[in-house]
Image (cartoon, rainbow, N blue to C red):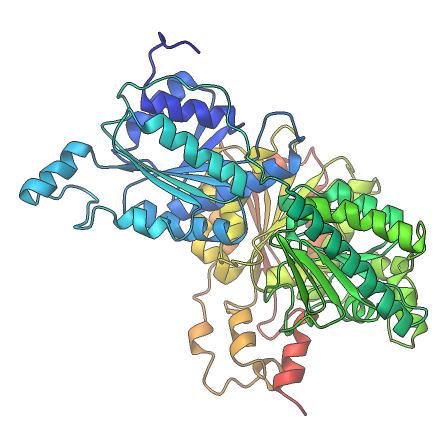
Length: 623
Protein backbone atom coordinates (compact mmCIF):
# COMPACT_ATOMS: atom_id res chain seq x y z
CA UNK A 1 0.00 0.00 0.00
CA UNK A 2 1.52 3.31 -1.06
CA UNK A 3 1.03 6.72 0.48
CA UNK A 4 -0.23 8.02 -2.87
CA UNK A 5 -3.42 5.97 -2.70
CA UNK A 6 -6.57 7.71 -1.53
CA UNK A 7 -7.15 6.61 2.06
CA UNK A 8 -9.64 7.78 4.65
CA UNK A 9 -10.56 6.67 8.14
CA UNK A 10 -13.48 4.52 6.96
CA UNK A 11 -11.38 2.67 4.41
CA UNK A 12 -8.57 2.25 6.94
CA UNK A 13 -10.82 0.59 9.53
CA UNK A 14 -12.62 -1.56 6.96
CA UNK A 15 -9.29 -2.76 5.55
CA UNK A 16 -7.99 -3.65 8.98
CA UNK A 17 -11.14 -5.72 9.62
CA UNK A 18 -10.63 -7.58 6.35
CA UNK A 19 -6.95 -8.20 7.11
CA UNK A 20 -7.97 -9.85 10.38
CA UNK A 21 -10.00 -12.39 8.42
CA UNK A 22 -13.40 -10.87 9.20
CA UNK A 23 -15.83 -11.72 6.40
CA UNK A 24 -19.07 -10.44 7.96
CA UNK A 25 -19.83 -7.31 9.98
CA UNK A 26 -23.02 -7.52 12.04
CA UNK A 27 -25.11 -4.63 13.26
CA UNK A 28 -28.00 -2.18 13.01
CA UNK A 29 -27.42 0.90 10.81
CA UNK A 30 -28.00 4.53 11.66
CA UNK A 31 -27.29 7.85 10.02
CA UNK A 32 -23.88 8.13 11.67
CA UNK A 33 -22.89 4.63 10.51
CA UNK A 34 -24.11 4.76 6.91
CA UNK A 35 -21.01 6.39 5.34
CA UNK A 36 -18.73 3.76 6.83
CA UNK A 37 -20.84 0.89 5.49
CA UNK A 38 -20.73 2.37 1.99
CA UNK A 39 -16.95 2.78 2.16
CA UNK A 40 -16.58 -0.80 3.42
CA UNK A 41 -18.71 -2.17 0.60
CA UNK A 42 -16.81 -0.22 -2.06
CA UNK A 43 -13.32 -1.10 -0.83
CA UNK A 44 -13.39 -4.54 0.82
CA UNK A 45 -15.02 -7.94 0.64
CA UNK A 46 -16.48 -7.67 4.16
CA UNK A 47 -20.24 -8.24 3.99
CA UNK A 48 -22.75 -6.27 6.01
CA UNK A 49 -25.28 -8.38 7.94
CA UNK A 50 -28.08 -6.19 9.23
CA UNK A 51 -30.03 -7.67 12.14
CA UNK A 52 -33.34 -6.61 13.74
CA UNK A 53 -31.67 -5.76 17.06
CA UNK A 54 -28.29 -4.63 18.32
CA UNK A 55 -28.44 -7.39 20.91
CA UNK A 56 -28.85 -9.99 18.19
CA UNK A 57 -25.98 -8.46 16.23
CA UNK A 58 -23.75 -8.68 19.29
CA UNK A 59 -24.62 -12.32 19.89
CA UNK A 60 -23.96 -13.08 16.21
CA UNK A 61 -20.55 -11.40 16.31
CA UNK A 62 -19.69 -13.21 19.55
CA UNK A 63 -20.53 -16.63 18.10
CA UNK A 64 -18.84 -15.77 14.80
CA UNK A 65 -15.62 -15.06 16.71
CA UNK A 66 -15.87 -18.30 18.69
CA UNK A 67 -16.42 -20.37 15.56
CA UNK A 68 -13.65 -18.71 13.56
CA UNK A 69 -11.18 -18.96 16.44
CA UNK A 70 -11.92 -22.67 16.77
CA UNK A 71 -11.60 -23.32 13.04
CA UNK A 72 -8.59 -21.31 11.89
CA UNK A 73 -5.17 -22.86 11.59
CA UNK A 74 -2.55 -21.08 13.72
CA UNK A 75 -0.18 -19.13 11.51
CA UNK A 76 -2.49 -18.75 8.51
CA UNK A 77 -3.02 -15.04 9.17
CA UNK A 78 -6.63 -15.18 10.33
CA UNK A 79 -7.12 -14.18 13.94
CA UNK A 80 -10.59 -15.51 14.85
CA UNK A 81 -12.15 -12.15 15.66
CA UNK A 82 -15.72 -10.86 15.33
CA UNK A 83 -17.00 -7.34 14.70
CA UNK A 84 -20.26 -5.48 15.24
CA UNK A 85 -21.23 -1.91 14.32
CA UNK A 86 -24.07 0.26 15.65
CA UNK A 87 -24.99 3.88 16.07
CA UNK A 88 -24.35 6.08 19.06
CA UNK A 89 -26.11 5.70 22.46
CA UNK A 90 -29.42 4.14 21.41
CA UNK A 91 -27.51 1.45 19.55
CA UNK A 92 -24.42 1.14 21.70
CA UNK A 93 -26.34 0.81 24.96
CA UNK A 94 -28.40 -2.02 23.43
CA UNK A 95 -25.13 -3.67 22.40
CA UNK A 96 -23.63 -3.41 25.88
CA UNK A 97 -25.03 -6.74 27.13
CA UNK A 98 -23.41 -8.89 24.40
CA UNK A 99 -20.10 -7.05 24.78
CA UNK A 100 -20.26 -7.60 28.53
CA UNK A 101 -20.72 -11.32 27.91
CA UNK A 102 -17.80 -11.41 25.48
CA UNK A 103 -15.61 -9.67 28.04
CA UNK A 104 -16.46 -12.16 30.79
CA UNK A 105 -16.01 -15.16 28.48
CA UNK A 106 -12.82 -13.99 26.71
CA UNK A 107 -14.23 -13.57 23.21
CA UNK A 108 -12.33 -11.13 20.93
CA UNK A 109 -14.85 -8.66 19.52
CA UNK A 110 -14.52 -5.25 17.89
CA UNK A 111 -17.44 -2.99 18.84
CA UNK A 112 -17.74 -0.03 16.48
CA UNK A 113 -20.00 2.89 17.38
CA UNK A 114 -20.66 5.69 14.91
CA UNK A 115 -20.98 8.92 16.87
CA UNK A 116 -22.22 12.45 16.16
CA UNK A 117 -19.71 14.64 14.35
CA UNK A 118 -17.00 16.72 15.95
CA UNK A 119 -18.87 19.80 14.74
CA UNK A 120 -22.04 18.68 16.55
CA UNK A 121 -20.13 18.24 19.79
CA UNK A 122 -18.64 21.74 19.42
CA UNK A 123 -22.14 23.12 18.90
CA UNK A 124 -23.31 21.42 22.07
CA UNK A 125 -20.27 22.71 23.95
CA UNK A 126 -20.91 26.28 22.76
CA UNK A 127 -24.69 26.66 22.78
CA UNK A 128 -26.06 23.46 24.36
CA UNK A 129 -27.55 22.09 21.12
CA UNK A 130 -28.31 18.36 21.35
CA UNK A 131 -28.93 16.33 18.19
CA UNK A 132 -30.04 12.75 17.71
CA UNK A 133 -28.78 10.20 20.24
CA UNK A 134 -26.62 12.71 22.14
CA UNK A 135 -26.67 13.04 25.91
CA UNK A 136 -25.37 15.81 28.12
CA UNK A 137 -22.33 13.68 28.96
CA UNK A 138 -20.02 13.49 25.98
CA UNK A 139 -18.11 10.51 27.39
CA UNK A 140 -21.14 8.52 28.51
CA UNK A 141 -20.69 5.76 25.92
CA UNK A 142 -16.94 5.63 26.40
CA UNK A 143 -17.16 5.44 30.19
CA UNK A 144 -19.62 2.54 30.07
CA UNK A 145 -17.63 0.54 27.54
CA UNK A 146 -14.41 0.98 29.48
CA UNK A 147 -15.94 -1.40 32.04
CA UNK A 148 -16.30 -4.27 29.56
CA UNK A 149 -13.39 -3.87 27.12
CA UNK A 150 -9.60 -4.04 27.26
CA UNK A 151 -9.31 -0.83 25.23
CA UNK A 152 -11.81 1.90 24.38
CA UNK A 153 -11.06 4.79 22.03
CA UNK A 154 -12.92 7.88 20.81
CA UNK A 155 -11.65 8.86 17.37
CA UNK A 156 -12.12 12.56 16.68
CA UNK A 157 -8.92 13.39 14.77
CA UNK A 158 -8.20 11.70 11.45
CA UNK A 159 -4.47 12.17 11.90
CA UNK A 160 -4.54 10.05 15.05
CA UNK A 161 -7.08 7.50 13.79
CA UNK A 162 -4.62 4.91 12.37
CA UNK A 163 -2.64 4.74 15.61
CA UNK A 164 -5.79 4.55 17.74
CA UNK A 165 -7.38 1.85 15.56
CA UNK A 166 -4.20 -0.25 15.45
CA UNK A 167 -3.69 0.05 19.21
CA UNK A 168 -7.23 -1.10 19.98
CA UNK A 169 -7.22 -3.97 17.49
CA UNK A 170 -3.84 -5.19 18.73
CA UNK A 171 -5.21 -5.18 22.27
CA UNK A 172 -8.19 -7.23 21.09
CA UNK A 173 -5.92 -9.82 19.51
CA UNK A 174 -3.50 -9.93 22.41
CA UNK A 175 -5.97 -10.07 25.29
CA UNK A 176 -8.64 -12.04 23.38
CA UNK A 177 -11.32 -9.73 24.72
CA UNK A 178 -13.52 -6.95 23.28
CA UNK A 179 -12.43 -3.44 22.34
CA UNK A 180 -14.49 -0.34 21.61
CA UNK A 181 -14.01 2.18 18.78
CA UNK A 182 -16.21 5.28 18.78
CA UNK A 183 -15.78 7.15 15.50
CA UNK A 184 -17.28 10.59 14.86
CA UNK A 185 -19.18 10.51 11.59
CA UNK A 186 -17.36 13.43 9.94
CA UNK A 187 -14.18 11.35 10.11
CA UNK A 188 -15.25 8.45 7.91
CA UNK A 189 -14.24 10.32 4.75
CA UNK A 190 -11.44 12.32 6.33
CA UNK A 191 -8.00 11.54 4.83
CA UNK A 192 -5.43 9.54 6.75
CA UNK A 193 -2.33 7.50 6.05
CA UNK A 194 -2.48 3.99 4.60
CA UNK A 195 -2.18 0.89 6.80
CA UNK A 196 1.35 -0.27 7.41
CA UNK A 197 1.91 -4.03 7.59
CA UNK A 198 -0.49 -6.38 9.35
CA UNK A 199 -1.63 -6.51 12.94
CA UNK A 200 -0.52 -9.46 15.06
CA UNK A 201 -1.16 -10.72 18.54
CA UNK A 202 1.48 -9.62 21.04
CA UNK A 203 2.47 -12.39 23.46
CA UNK A 204 3.62 -11.66 26.98
CA UNK A 205 7.40 -12.32 27.18
CA UNK A 206 8.53 -15.55 28.81
CA UNK A 207 11.17 -14.46 31.34
CA UNK A 208 13.55 -16.39 33.54
CA UNK A 209 11.18 -15.66 36.43
CA UNK A 210 8.31 -17.19 34.45
CA UNK A 211 10.48 -20.23 33.72
CA UNK A 212 11.17 -20.75 37.41
CA UNK A 213 7.50 -20.28 38.33
CA UNK A 214 6.43 -22.75 35.65
CA UNK A 215 8.96 -25.30 36.91
CA UNK A 216 7.74 -24.86 40.49
CA UNK A 217 4.08 -25.20 39.47
CA UNK A 218 4.74 -28.41 37.55
CA UNK A 219 6.83 -29.84 40.40
CA UNK A 220 4.10 -29.04 42.95
CA UNK A 221 1.47 -30.67 40.73
CA UNK A 222 3.47 -33.89 40.41
CA UNK A 223 4.00 -33.91 44.18
CA UNK A 224 0.26 -33.43 44.81
CA UNK A 225 -0.62 -36.33 42.50
CA UNK A 226 2.02 -38.53 44.15
CA UNK A 227 0.74 -37.66 47.63
CA UNK A 228 -2.89 -38.50 46.88
CA UNK A 229 -2.02 -41.64 44.92
CA UNK A 230 -0.13 -42.85 47.97
CA UNK A 231 -3.06 -41.98 50.21
CA UNK A 232 -5.51 -43.80 47.92
CA UNK A 233 -3.85 -46.92 46.50
CA UNK A 234 -5.41 -48.10 43.26
CA UNK A 235 -6.76 -44.66 42.40
CA UNK A 236 -5.46 -42.37 39.66
CA UNK A 237 -6.13 -38.69 38.92
CA UNK A 238 -8.64 -37.26 36.46
CA UNK A 239 -8.21 -34.22 34.21
CA UNK A 240 -10.82 -31.50 33.71
CA UNK A 241 -10.52 -29.54 30.46
CA UNK A 242 -11.95 -26.04 30.53
CA UNK A 243 -12.80 -22.98 28.48
CA UNK A 244 -9.22 -21.80 28.03
CA UNK A 245 -8.36 -24.98 26.13
CA UNK A 246 -10.77 -23.56 23.56
CA UNK A 247 -9.85 -19.87 23.85
CA UNK A 248 -6.11 -20.52 23.54
CA UNK A 249 -6.51 -23.32 20.95
CA UNK A 250 -4.84 -25.94 23.09
CA UNK A 251 -6.92 -28.97 22.15
CA UNK A 252 -3.96 -30.67 20.48
CA UNK A 253 -1.69 -30.09 23.48
CA UNK A 254 -4.36 -31.39 25.85
CA UNK A 255 -4.98 -34.47 23.69
CA UNK A 256 -1.25 -35.19 23.66
CA UNK A 257 -1.18 -34.97 27.46
CA UNK A 258 -4.04 -37.48 27.68
CA UNK A 259 -2.42 -39.83 25.18
CA UNK A 260 1.01 -39.72 26.83
CA UNK A 261 -0.19 -40.16 30.42
CA UNK A 262 -3.39 -42.16 29.92
CA UNK A 263 -5.22 -39.98 32.48
CA UNK A 264 -9.00 -39.93 31.87
CA UNK A 265 -10.68 -36.55 31.49
CA UNK A 266 -13.94 -34.66 31.75
CA UNK A 267 -14.71 -31.23 30.31
CA UNK A 268 -16.68 -28.20 31.43
CA UNK A 269 -19.82 -27.26 29.49
CA UNK A 270 -17.89 -24.41 27.90
CA UNK A 271 -15.20 -26.79 26.64
CA UNK A 272 -17.64 -29.45 25.47
CA UNK A 273 -16.41 -31.09 22.23
CA UNK A 274 -13.34 -28.81 22.05
CA UNK A 275 -11.42 -32.01 22.70
CA UNK A 276 -13.09 -34.76 20.70
CA UNK A 277 -15.48 -36.81 22.80
CA UNK A 278 -14.23 -39.85 20.91
CA UNK A 279 -10.80 -39.37 22.48
CA UNK A 280 -9.95 -42.40 24.64
CA UNK A 281 -10.38 -41.38 28.26
CA UNK A 282 -13.30 -38.96 27.76
CA UNK A 283 -15.54 -39.36 30.80
CA UNK A 284 -18.35 -36.86 30.30
CA UNK A 285 -19.08 -33.27 31.33
CA UNK A 286 -18.42 -32.34 34.95
CA UNK A 287 -20.60 -29.54 36.28
CA UNK A 288 -20.43 -29.84 40.06
CA UNK A 289 -23.56 -31.26 41.64
CA UNK A 290 -25.44 -30.65 38.39
CA UNK A 291 -23.30 -33.25 36.63
CA UNK A 292 -24.84 -36.48 35.50
CA UNK A 293 -24.78 -38.49 38.77
CA UNK A 294 -22.58 -41.13 37.15
CA UNK A 295 -20.07 -38.52 35.98
CA UNK A 296 -20.13 -36.84 39.39
CA UNK A 297 -19.33 -40.14 41.11
CA UNK A 298 -16.58 -41.06 38.65
CA UNK A 299 -15.02 -37.60 38.88
CA UNK A 300 -15.07 -37.52 42.68
CA UNK A 301 -13.81 -41.12 42.79
CA UNK A 302 -10.39 -40.14 41.42
CA UNK A 303 -7.49 -39.63 43.79
CA UNK A 304 -7.27 -35.96 42.77
CA UNK A 305 -8.51 -33.59 40.09
CA UNK A 306 -6.44 -31.52 37.63
CA UNK A 307 -8.30 -28.60 36.03
CA UNK A 308 -6.66 -27.19 32.91
CA UNK A 309 -8.14 -23.94 31.65
CA UNK A 310 -11.24 -24.36 33.83
CA UNK A 311 -13.04 -21.35 35.25
CA UNK A 312 -14.58 -21.43 38.71
CA UNK A 313 -18.14 -20.40 37.86
CA UNK A 314 -21.56 -21.45 39.10
CA UNK A 315 -22.09 -23.41 35.89
CA UNK A 316 -18.84 -25.33 36.27
CA UNK A 317 -19.08 -25.95 40.01
CA UNK A 318 -22.86 -26.04 40.45
CA UNK A 319 -23.71 -26.38 44.11
CA UNK A 320 -20.01 -26.45 45.05
CA UNK A 321 -18.24 -23.37 46.37
CA UNK A 322 -14.76 -24.74 47.07
CA UNK A 323 -12.48 -27.02 45.10
CA UNK A 324 -10.51 -28.54 48.00
CA UNK A 325 -6.90 -29.47 48.77
CA UNK A 326 -6.89 -32.39 46.30
CA UNK A 327 -7.30 -30.11 43.28
CA UNK A 328 -5.00 -28.41 40.82
CA UNK A 329 -6.49 -25.63 38.69
CA UNK A 330 -4.45 -23.91 35.98
CA UNK A 331 -6.41 -20.93 34.62
CA UNK A 332 -6.36 -17.15 34.26
CA UNK A 333 -2.55 -17.05 34.02
CA UNK A 334 -1.88 -18.88 37.25
CA UNK A 335 -1.86 -22.35 38.83
CA UNK A 336 -3.45 -23.28 42.16
CA UNK A 337 -2.00 -26.48 43.60
CA UNK A 338 -3.92 -27.37 46.75
CA UNK A 339 -3.43 -24.31 48.97
CA UNK A 340 -0.42 -22.99 47.01
CA UNK A 341 -0.62 -20.53 44.13
CA UNK A 342 1.84 -19.90 41.31
CA UNK A 343 1.12 -16.65 39.43
CA UNK A 344 1.91 -15.69 35.85
CA UNK A 345 2.07 -19.24 34.48
CA UNK A 346 0.82 -19.54 30.92
CA UNK A 347 -1.46 -22.49 30.24
CA UNK A 348 0.08 -23.07 26.80
CA UNK A 349 3.40 -23.81 28.50
CA UNK A 350 2.03 -25.57 31.56
CA UNK A 351 0.18 -28.36 29.73
CA UNK A 352 3.14 -29.77 27.73
CA UNK A 353 5.57 -29.36 30.65
CA UNK A 354 3.14 -31.19 32.94
CA UNK A 355 2.89 -34.01 30.42
CA UNK A 356 6.65 -34.39 30.27
CA UNK A 357 7.00 -34.35 34.06
CA UNK A 358 4.24 -36.93 34.59
CA UNK A 359 5.68 -39.39 32.07
CA UNK A 360 9.14 -38.96 33.61
CA UNK A 361 7.87 -39.43 37.17
CA UNK A 362 5.38 -42.26 36.63
CA UNK A 363 6.26 -43.66 33.21
CA UNK A 364 4.32 -43.45 29.92
CA UNK A 365 0.61 -44.18 30.48
CA UNK A 366 1.24 -45.43 34.01
CA UNK A 367 -1.57 -43.14 35.21
CA UNK A 368 -4.06 -44.68 32.78
CA UNK A 369 -7.39 -45.79 34.17
CA UNK A 370 -11.08 -45.93 33.34
CA UNK A 371 -12.76 -43.36 35.60
CA UNK A 372 -16.02 -45.31 35.67
CA UNK A 373 -14.41 -48.70 36.25
CA UNK A 374 -12.35 -47.19 39.04
CA UNK A 375 -15.49 -45.79 40.71
CA UNK A 376 -17.45 -48.98 40.05
CA UNK A 377 -14.74 -51.07 41.72
CA UNK A 378 -15.04 -48.83 44.77
CA UNK A 379 -18.65 -49.95 45.11
CA UNK A 380 -20.20 -46.79 43.65
CA UNK A 381 -23.41 -47.16 41.67
CA UNK A 382 -22.09 -46.20 38.23
CA UNK A 383 -21.74 -48.02 34.90
CA UNK A 384 -18.91 -50.52 34.93
CA UNK A 385 -16.98 -48.69 32.20
CA UNK A 386 -16.79 -45.42 30.30
CA UNK A 387 -17.97 -47.19 27.17
CA UNK A 388 -21.11 -48.34 28.97
CA UNK A 389 -21.77 -44.81 30.24
CA UNK A 390 -21.34 -43.20 26.82
CA UNK A 391 -23.54 -45.79 25.16
CA UNK A 392 -26.35 -44.86 27.53
CA UNK A 393 -26.33 -41.22 26.43
CA UNK A 394 -27.81 -42.06 23.03
CA UNK A 395 -30.62 -44.46 23.75
CA UNK A 396 -33.22 -43.52 21.16
CA UNK A 397 -32.97 -47.01 19.77
CA UNK A 398 -34.51 -48.22 23.03
CA UNK A 399 -38.20 -47.90 23.92
CA UNK A 400 -39.01 -44.41 25.20
CA UNK A 401 -42.15 -43.11 26.87
CA UNK A 402 -44.48 -41.35 24.48
CA UNK A 403 -44.54 -37.91 26.14
CA UNK A 404 -41.32 -35.98 25.69
CA UNK A 405 -39.30 -35.00 28.75
CA UNK A 406 -36.14 -32.89 28.90
CA UNK A 407 -33.95 -35.93 29.46
CA UNK A 408 -35.52 -38.26 26.91
CA UNK A 409 -35.60 -35.46 24.32
CA UNK A 410 -31.84 -34.94 24.63
CA UNK A 411 -31.18 -38.69 24.63
CA UNK A 412 -33.11 -38.87 21.37
CA UNK A 413 -31.17 -35.92 19.94
CA UNK A 414 -27.87 -37.48 21.01
CA UNK A 415 -28.71 -40.60 19.03
CA UNK A 416 -29.68 -38.46 16.02
CA UNK A 417 -26.37 -36.60 16.06
CA UNK A 418 -24.50 -39.88 16.42
CA UNK A 419 -26.29 -41.54 13.53
CA UNK A 420 -26.16 -38.55 11.20
CA UNK A 421 -22.45 -38.04 11.72
CA UNK A 422 -21.10 -41.57 11.97
CA UNK A 423 -22.91 -43.19 9.10
CA UNK A 424 -26.04 -44.97 10.27
CA UNK A 425 -28.54 -42.21 9.50
CA UNK A 426 -30.48 -41.51 6.30
CA UNK A 427 -27.93 -39.09 4.85
CA UNK A 428 -25.04 -39.48 7.30
CA UNK A 429 -23.19 -36.60 5.66
CA UNK A 430 -24.15 -33.50 7.63
CA UNK A 431 -21.86 -32.17 10.36
CA UNK A 432 -23.70 -30.14 12.99
CA UNK A 433 -22.89 -27.29 15.32
CA UNK A 434 -25.00 -27.46 18.48
CA UNK A 435 -25.84 -24.08 20.01
CA UNK A 436 -27.44 -24.18 23.43
CA UNK A 437 -29.06 -21.34 25.29
CA UNK A 438 -28.97 -20.83 29.05
CA UNK A 439 -31.15 -22.53 31.69
CA UNK A 440 -32.73 -25.98 31.23
CA UNK A 441 -31.62 -26.09 27.58
CA UNK A 442 -27.99 -25.82 28.68
CA UNK A 443 -28.34 -28.27 31.56
CA UNK A 444 -30.15 -30.79 29.36
CA UNK A 445 -27.80 -30.53 26.38
CA UNK A 446 -24.54 -30.81 28.32
CA UNK A 447 -24.74 -34.61 28.26
CA UNK A 448 -25.21 -34.95 24.52
CA UNK A 449 -22.52 -37.27 23.25
CA UNK A 450 -21.00 -35.16 20.50
CA UNK A 451 -19.74 -37.06 17.44
CA UNK A 452 -16.34 -36.40 15.89
CA UNK A 453 -17.52 -33.92 13.26
CA UNK A 454 -19.98 -32.06 15.47
CA UNK A 455 -19.22 -29.11 17.72
CA UNK A 456 -20.89 -27.35 20.63
CA UNK A 457 -21.13 -23.67 21.56
CA UNK A 458 -22.81 -22.06 24.57
CA UNK A 459 -22.48 -18.92 26.64
CA UNK A 460 -22.05 -20.79 29.89
CA UNK A 461 -20.72 -18.10 32.22
CA UNK A 462 -22.54 -14.87 31.29
CA UNK A 463 -25.74 -16.87 30.60
CA UNK A 464 -27.72 -14.18 28.80
CA UNK A 465 -31.04 -15.71 27.83
CA UNK A 466 -31.78 -15.57 24.12
CA UNK A 467 -28.09 -15.77 23.18
CA UNK A 468 -28.47 -18.88 21.04
CA UNK A 469 -30.92 -17.42 18.50
CA UNK A 470 -28.69 -14.49 17.60
CA UNK A 471 -25.53 -16.58 17.90
CA UNK A 472 -26.87 -18.95 15.26
CA UNK A 473 -26.46 -16.25 12.61
CA UNK A 474 -22.78 -15.78 13.39
CA UNK A 475 -21.98 -19.47 13.58
CA UNK A 476 -23.75 -20.31 10.33
CA UNK A 477 -21.98 -17.53 8.40
CA UNK A 478 -18.61 -18.34 9.96
CA UNK A 479 -18.93 -21.95 8.88
CA UNK A 480 -20.57 -21.54 5.48
CA UNK A 481 -17.74 -23.30 3.66
CA UNK A 482 -17.88 -26.25 6.05
CA UNK A 483 -21.66 -26.46 5.57
CA UNK A 484 -22.08 -27.17 9.26
CA UNK A 485 -25.77 -26.97 10.06
CA UNK A 486 -26.72 -25.30 13.35
CA UNK A 487 -28.94 -27.23 15.75
CA UNK A 488 -30.30 -24.85 18.37
CA UNK A 489 -31.81 -25.60 21.80
CA UNK A 490 -33.54 -22.65 23.46
CA UNK A 491 -36.15 -22.31 26.19
CA UNK A 492 -39.44 -20.55 25.52
CA UNK A 493 -38.62 -17.62 27.81
CA UNK A 494 -35.21 -17.18 26.21
CA UNK A 495 -36.69 -17.42 22.73
CA UNK A 496 -39.18 -14.64 23.41
CA UNK A 497 -36.22 -12.31 24.05
CA UNK A 498 -34.66 -12.65 20.58
CA UNK A 499 -37.09 -14.50 18.32
CA UNK A 500 -36.92 -11.73 15.69
CA UNK A 501 -33.40 -12.91 14.84
CA UNK A 502 -35.10 -15.71 12.91
CA UNK A 503 -35.67 -13.01 10.31
CA UNK A 504 -31.90 -12.80 9.82
CA UNK A 505 -31.68 -16.57 9.39
CA UNK A 506 -34.21 -16.46 6.58
CA UNK A 507 -32.72 -13.36 4.98
CA UNK A 508 -29.20 -14.82 4.99
CA UNK A 509 -30.43 -18.12 3.52
CA UNK A 510 -29.10 -20.23 6.36
CA UNK A 511 -31.00 -23.30 7.52
CA UNK A 512 -30.70 -23.90 11.26
CA UNK A 513 -32.91 -26.34 13.14
CA UNK A 514 -34.29 -24.43 16.15
CA UNK A 515 -35.91 -26.39 18.98
CA UNK A 516 -37.97 -24.17 21.31
CA UNK A 517 -38.41 -26.08 24.57
CA UNK A 518 -41.88 -25.01 25.71
CA UNK A 519 -42.68 -26.13 29.25
CA UNK A 520 -46.15 -24.58 29.16
CA UNK A 521 -44.86 -21.01 29.12
CA UNK A 522 -42.77 -21.04 32.28
CA UNK A 523 -39.36 -19.80 33.41
CA UNK A 524 -38.45 -23.21 34.78
CA UNK A 525 -34.87 -22.45 35.79
CA UNK A 526 -35.94 -19.36 37.75
CA UNK A 527 -38.50 -21.39 39.66
CA UNK A 528 -35.86 -24.04 40.36
CA UNK A 529 -33.45 -21.44 41.72
CA UNK A 530 -36.02 -19.59 43.83
CA UNK A 531 -38.22 -22.43 45.06
CA UNK A 532 -37.20 -25.91 43.86
CA UNK A 533 -39.85 -27.47 46.13
CA UNK A 534 -42.34 -26.49 43.43
CA UNK A 535 -41.05 -29.47 41.45
CA UNK A 536 -41.48 -31.87 44.33
CA UNK A 537 -44.85 -31.05 45.82
CA UNK A 538 -46.18 -29.02 42.90
CA UNK A 539 -46.90 -26.12 45.20
CA UNK A 540 -45.49 -22.66 44.67
CA UNK A 541 -46.35 -20.80 47.87
CA UNK A 542 -47.59 -18.10 45.54
CA UNK A 543 -44.06 -17.46 44.30
CA UNK A 544 -44.41 -18.61 40.71
CA UNK A 545 -46.60 -15.83 39.31
CA UNK A 546 -43.65 -13.85 37.92
CA UNK A 547 -42.27 -16.90 36.13
CA UNK A 548 -45.37 -17.37 33.98
CA UNK A 549 -44.99 -16.45 30.30
CA UNK A 550 -47.67 -15.55 27.80
CA UNK A 551 -48.15 -18.66 25.62
CA UNK A 552 -47.16 -18.42 21.96
CA UNK A 553 -47.73 -20.68 18.99
CA UNK A 554 -44.01 -20.68 18.25
CA UNK A 555 -44.23 -22.92 15.21
CA UNK A 556 -46.52 -20.38 13.51
CA UNK A 557 -43.66 -17.86 13.40
CA UNK A 558 -42.44 -19.76 10.35
CA UNK A 559 -45.37 -18.15 8.51
CA UNK A 560 -44.35 -14.71 9.79
CA UNK A 561 -40.70 -14.84 8.78
CA UNK A 562 -40.85 -17.20 5.82
CA UNK A 563 -42.13 -16.61 2.30
CA UNK A 564 -42.43 -18.50 -0.96
CA UNK A 565 -39.08 -17.11 -2.03
CA UNK A 566 -37.37 -17.60 1.35
CA UNK A 567 -39.11 -20.58 2.97
CA UNK A 568 -39.21 -21.51 6.63
CA UNK A 569 -40.86 -24.56 8.15
CA UNK A 570 -42.57 -24.79 11.53
CA UNK A 571 -43.93 -27.76 13.47
CA UNK A 572 -45.15 -28.58 16.96
CA UNK A 573 -44.29 -31.93 18.57
CA UNK A 574 -45.44 -33.69 21.75
CA UNK A 575 -44.16 -37.27 21.49
CA UNK A 576 -41.07 -39.28 20.59
CA UNK A 577 -42.88 -40.66 17.59
CA UNK A 578 -43.40 -37.15 16.23
CA UNK A 579 -39.79 -36.27 16.99
CA UNK A 580 -38.52 -39.39 15.20
CA UNK A 581 -40.63 -38.62 12.14
CA UNK A 582 -39.40 -35.03 12.02
CA UNK A 583 -35.76 -36.03 12.43
CA UNK A 584 -36.11 -38.48 9.57
CA UNK A 585 -37.24 -35.60 7.38
CA UNK A 586 -34.40 -33.39 8.57
CA UNK A 587 -31.94 -36.17 7.73
CA UNK A 588 -33.26 -36.37 4.17
CA UNK A 589 -31.56 -33.68 2.04
CA UNK A 590 -34.27 -34.09 -0.62
CA UNK A 591 -37.04 -33.06 1.77
CA UNK A 592 -38.18 -29.50 1.05
CA UNK A 593 -38.37 -28.60 4.74
CA UNK A 594 -34.57 -28.32 4.59
CA UNK A 595 -34.70 -25.45 2.09
CA UNK A 596 -34.70 -22.96 4.95
CA UNK A 597 -34.76 -22.66 8.74
CA UNK A 598 -36.83 -25.17 10.70
CA UNK A 599 -38.62 -24.07 13.88
CA UNK A 600 -39.86 -26.82 16.21
CA UNK A 601 -41.99 -26.18 19.27
CA UNK A 602 -41.26 -29.00 21.72
CA UNK A 603 -44.15 -29.36 24.17
CA UNK A 604 -43.05 -30.34 27.68
CA UNK A 605 -44.80 -30.53 31.04
CA UNK A 606 -44.44 -27.47 33.28
CA UNK A 607 -43.26 -29.62 36.18
CA UNK A 608 -40.60 -31.45 34.17
CA UNK A 609 -36.92 -30.60 34.61
CA UNK A 610 -33.54 -32.11 33.68
CA UNK A 611 -32.49 -34.76 36.19
CA UNK A 612 -29.21 -32.88 36.62
CA UNK A 613 -31.12 -30.36 38.76
CA UNK A 614 -32.34 -32.99 41.22
CA UNK A 615 -29.65 -32.01 43.70
CA UNK A 616 -31.37 -28.64 44.19
CA UNK A 617 -34.61 -30.33 45.21
CA UNK A 618 -32.88 -32.80 47.54
CA UNK A 619 -30.98 -30.00 49.27
CA UNK A 620 -33.86 -27.56 49.63
CA UNK A 621 -36.78 -29.93 50.05
CA UNK A 622 -35.80 -32.81 52.36
CA UNK A 623 -38.43 -35.44 53.11
